[in-house]
Length: 160
Image (cartoon, rainbow, N blue to C red; front, side, top):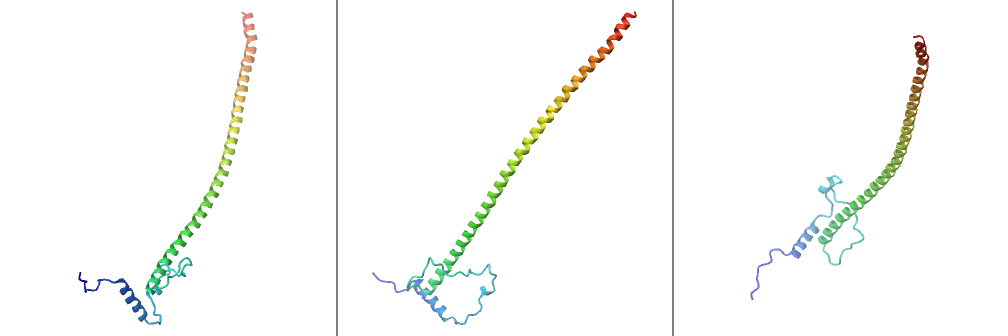
């Protein structure tokens, strides 16, 4: 079987080596980078490499840089997730406080409602008592009127 004499279209190891060589050719004096002028929210996070990862022996510089960049992004996202957890706990504490306050207010409302019912009963009994007293007064007045009018009727009958 004949082997192809054409080189492979893309040899990743050779490509990686070429990129690494180009980086080595860059001047060691640091020139300003576009990220120097970017707002802090756009720049890559300034995190050291997390202690839960470490470079493998033999990894190329490009591979190390790429891996570091990716792990930093993941670490930044993990820190944001943790911050959300802290915020969630704070919100839960506020909800618990509001719940306690709502329960206390509910108890006050129950007490107020009980006072209103007691006052309603007092007013109800007072009105009925006044009504009974008024009925009694009217009855007595009718009886007195009848007693006062009765001798006049007897006199008029006697005088006839």
